[in-house]
Length: 373
Image (cartoon, rainbow, N blue to C red; front, side, top):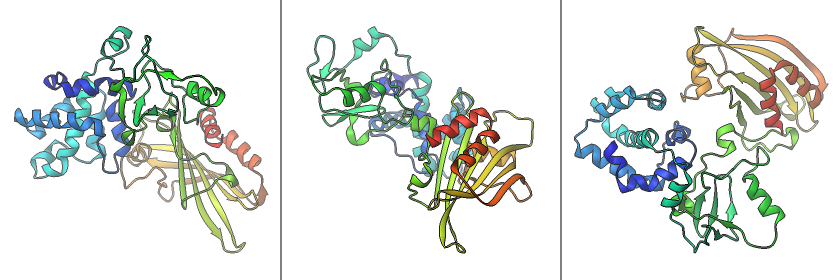
């Protein structure tokens, strides 16, 4: 592994990976339930890793065991669980199925384990590869560039923002950093200059969003009641409290009222607390359900329930680590415990919202407001 870190291919991507601000293996978890396509800029390094593995005649089972034993941040064990295989699989005639994934995990492990902390200006300047005729300050004119949340597109390349750049957005849901939003909306003359460090550049078609607020904070669309356009019969939105890792789940499911001959939506909210270690065999969540008629802009049913899950099922539900237990998995019959309900009336959005706010704990209320913002 240390020999790999001395190769040119490793050094070519080390700064890029560090600048992503999230470990490479963290990004890989997004593709855990589907085939993961390794980013183009990492393919040369994956090839180096594969060659070194073969040249040293290292058994695949042995390298997997080594990573598990030295798994300083839990990612390898996580993949062991998520992908449903262990070191023994590499010696049971299943090598071809898992070799590619092993190389991806191993490459990510090396980058995450050995990458240097690069936050010293002298080090950054010394190794920069500046293009497009920089001025004496290292800046180049990028008029016409397209700014995105993680990068800006210029001259056919996607440039990740320099690690010293504050990329926080003005608004939680904005798709541009705050400085880029102001520059593009409030300035109409003069030049825009940025550092064009080729180490942080990839072909535009290979641009991948790593550190967007969407990626870290939530996924799924905002919910705007009847103004929402639901593209599928079921829409899932998840928001996360970064300080506690508690999640709030919102599920909207289309349905049809045969009696009224109208479409309505089931709106379900469930609290998903983060439980690292628990002595309990089960977990309780708060589940809120409403029946919303978008044509009339009213609710006709709102209820509150406490759900109980076995800890095994709940951990899979929360982490989405199993295709058989999705995040919107219902609890078993007999463990869906109703607390209160109102029905057969016409209830406004405000009534629904007020009931949600007084039922949910404050941190979950904040997550709800983010979804509804």
